[in-house]
Length: 101
Image 1 (cartoon, rainbow, N blue to C red):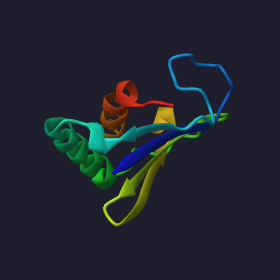
Image 2: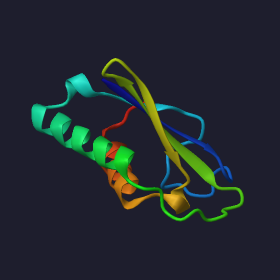
Image 3: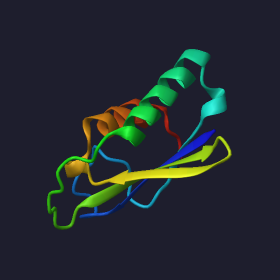
């Protein structure tokens, strides 16, 4: 399984704590220890099943797109930083330090 996180749109350079825009960051899950793969699977399932938070209009908002390749297909999750469900926020917090360019 491979995961790609892409940040698009929004005001360029407005928040230095986020990854660079339009530069995909990836994680090859086969390189993770068994416990981390299990935790990632749990976080992915929680994020995919979580109801979306109430929609807020966020002009010039960036969008995170998380794409999961593997398991016989491709699935994607996306949200703006100001409209992240707690589950998607947890997933991003877990993924960000493990991603590479």
